[in-house]
Length: 142
Image 1 (cartoon, rainbow, N blue to C red):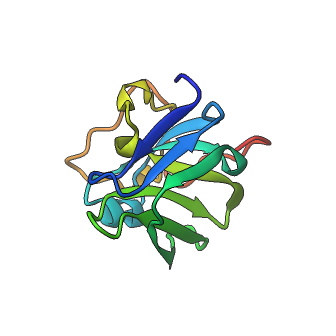
Image 2: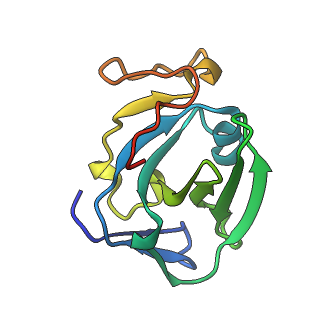
Image 3: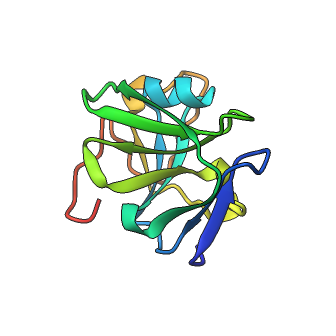
């Protein structure tokens, strides 16, 4: 994925920029991500928080206790409702950008499937990436 990369909501009211390469690309199958996005999983590009900045607009936000027990902080456009990005109390230095909100989502390549214990039976998991029934193992960078 070329850096910087950009994205925003469906109506254009909120725009953002990421000035660093992703540290991970993850498909999350937890029930919270399913509910937040209305889909079987959330394709997420994880970037360092300091590399993420809003260019236009101010998203609406809400927080919820996720399946992990940590607090998920989600941002979405208040005008069109498009999910944009999230952060978690589990990994405070990172932002999870919804791949569908990228200007060019074709660069998204999932590296891991997480919370697969919550995956829906109609959602076929990627066979060529590691699967974790809950969260993936933590590393020093993400």
